[in-house]
Length: 121
Image (cartoon, rainbow, N blue to C red):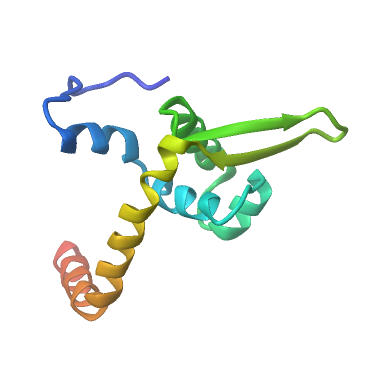
C-alpha cells in the first residue's frame, strides 16, 4: 500500500468522490463493468493502454470502496468476474452525464488540451 504524502482531507462531497474515483482508469472501468459482468482479460482488452497491474490495483480499490464486487468461480483455470454493486450502479447516470458533456464539448476540450500540451513542451 502506498504511503500518503498529503494528509487525507474528506471535508466535503467533492473530496469524498475524488478519493473514491481518483485513478486514471476507474471511471472507464465502472462504465465497462456497467455494460455487463466482465472478466479481467475483457477489461484489459477494452483498455489496452493500461497495464494489468494498474487495472488490478484500481479494481481492488473500487472493490474496497464497495462500488464493484468480485465473484470467483471454483473452476480450473480460475474464473473471476466483476459486477457493480447497487451502490456502484448509482454512479452510472453521473458518469453517463459526464460523458455527454465531454461529447458536447469535444472540439473545445481537444483545443484546450492541445494548447496545454504545447505549453508544457
